[in-house]
Amino acid sequence: MRNGYRRFFLAAGIAMLTSEIWKQAALTWTVGGGSYSWWHFPFQLCSIPMYVCLVLPWVKSRRVRQVLTAFLADFGMLGGIFAFFDTSGMHYGYLPLTVHSFAWHILLIVLGIAAARSDRDPSGACSFQSFGGAVCLYLACCLAATGINLCFDRYGTINMFYINPDYPMTQKVFRGIAAVLGDPAGIFLYIGATVLGAFLFHCIWRALGDR
Image (cartoon, rainbow, N blue to C red; front, side, top):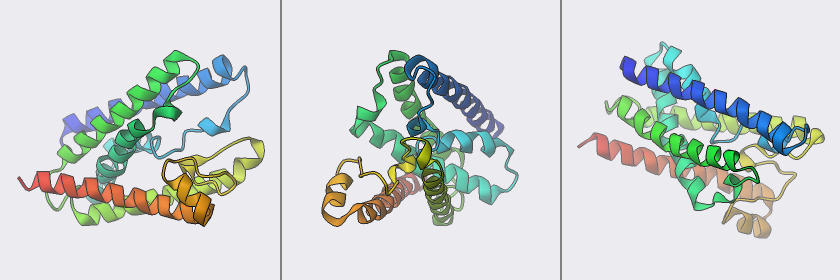
């Protein structure tokens, strides 16, 4: 990975972390009156790229780096684009938070493009091996999100990755499926559909890389 991409991802990660700290403070004090909202704990699919960007520039292993860039290019891009198909969760009563939310998801798209371009080698970030690693990272995040949901459920409403079995599915399409088949089936289908969507993006990057 060229130094220019390393600097870009690091700058993006620091900017995202700084803005996330501001967001948490604004939600707690400006909007919440001093009460913390666990619903906004920063561990959603669209939050993970922030952590990836902070780690990525320091990773020495090329294989691990390729997995991380594949995650940004596939899962990060998926989260950034599909958030705009249902923007209800991006609007707040406090305008700066709404602007932040839209800017965040636009940045996810930019990061996805940069990640795909940072390693165009067919054996690199666009390889199916790298995608497999990105899927493992995503599933590990789902497992961590489930642990967070179960551990902090007692302190308030929390639904990391939108897979808390204690709450009905809120995602479009999948809430209808969950209403018929039950929440566990809706959650597993949601996770599977996310992997499939990321795989489609991965195939697009591979096709563009072959040109």
